[in-house]
Length: 175
Image 1 (cartoon, rainbow, N blue to C red):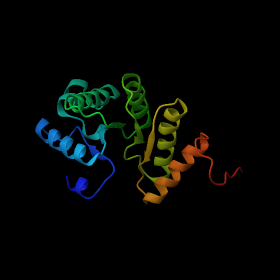
Image 2: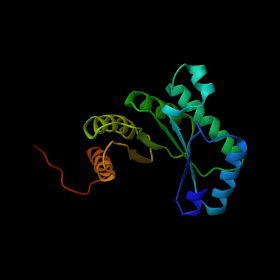
Image 3: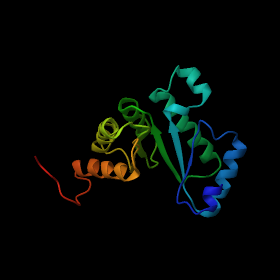
Image 4: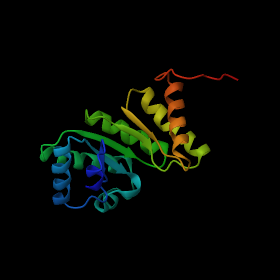
């Protein structure tokens, strides 16, 4: 609620820790009043306990079920200004979850591999995960998460977009 009061452009809710329907209803009312979209931010590391019990771990299917559950909650509250992310800390689960969700919904997808890792390893995970999805026409926005300064995350994201010819600005070095 403080983030909304501070003037943010989009609010993320984490299905694994948002809590009761009353709390979600309160957030929806506040975002509607400010004209702010909600990103349902499913994270493989913080899935709901019942889904972890059902699937045994944070599978792509569990992540999609979590996302769909919260889409329905928001839609039941007549809120449709929704963005979805389904981030795991490995490229394979991330790719599979987004592919499955893209078949189910028309909402924008915010792509990312969460807690991808060091600048070297995290760049590779992000390039593979985001690259496969973007190449196949899945995704609307991206977020690169590295154990590095934010400007490095932006640089890596830009290079991913350049390599797929989704952005053309800047010099391309061929060696």
